[in-house]
Image (cartoon, rainbow, N blue to C red; front, side, top):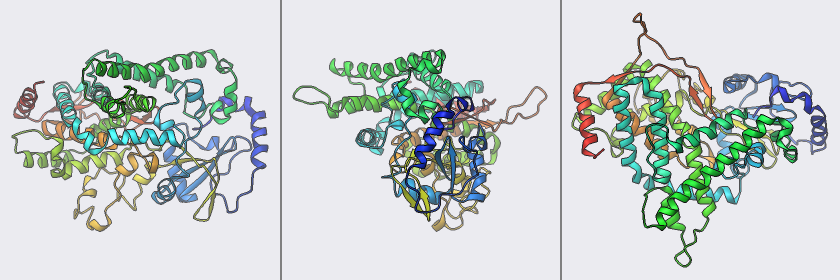
Length: 521
């Protein structure tokens, strides 16, 4: 959301006109939130680091409080640095804090007008959410339990035998889960064309730079100019991106619909939506565009959060062997070596659940929630919140607040276990990290249940049959993973690291093979 320096000078005249417009607006009736003093015209652009902005924002909390105000090219930005501020605005007043910034570059020039995360607040967004909440409800997700279990078993067999394929195999598994759930499609082990399309889209979007930072996003009227004004490479990328987005929107949906018309039932989200909305009179599918849009949203943006979290889980287990051992002891005691876990065992494995929760807290995949836009003026704790301000919820700061999570930089699943030394009073247990990891209010992720199910069964299966360990270099010295994270489109990923892993025992490997054989894999 931050304007690139390369665009500042050519836009000085535009900025001056914009400043004049802003100065003509009504003056606030209360003090504006505090924040670092900016520079004329460009505002606080030099105060914001190019990477890991959430850490700088967190530093500002001690100086400016729960809400920090910035300006970028005279556009107000508000950083919400506390759970209280996020709940008060994004949850309790979500009717005026659930809109998105314009995202003109992606919508008007690339044609990405159908993806739920980017939709403006209104009837279309609400329809998409209703469809997803129906198709991915807790009861609907039970239909995918077996598929998720099989995927976790296959992953364990692969990485237990060859830890070097850890990152690639996690990516394939998570993408495969999404495609199987959404379209009933089984991914290929290598060179899968459906996966390649989604990956190409994310690559093209990343090439556009930080989302919201292009001049056309800051001044939407610039979209009236041809894209080539900003360079041939940008124009060519936008043309390719539009083509790819059109492909993922229409082709997988058409394949499922054609199969249904031929009497072939492919159990999946898209099939269930078509069946539920198909007219018995004329065979037309009601809300068809919304259905294929929600399916394509799953396809294009449903992978990164779970993939990043599982890669962080691998780091956490290598660095915290005592946590791993305790989780394995819980699994062994409950399963008694007779079988491997299923999602129906989840309530009986509280420590494994706590490990998953702590992974989501310790290194959140979305440290900054996707930006919101205020729809009208408001007042919070005596501070004036301007209409059209951009709000950034600093989830990382909330999840590392020592008042809620003592020793926040340590990996401690015990904080969620009642009566443990880190949770002596269950009446004041720490906030559930999942309430931060999956978004807020009317913009909370409707795929949360499916994502949690995928995370839990993968973590439980891996810990049942495998052990993570720090790899050794050629001199026998342990290689610790780099804790630096890299940004994707909207999600951060741990930098590539060497993963150490092995099967816990011959018996564990045999049980894994037997389970896969029994399930006819």
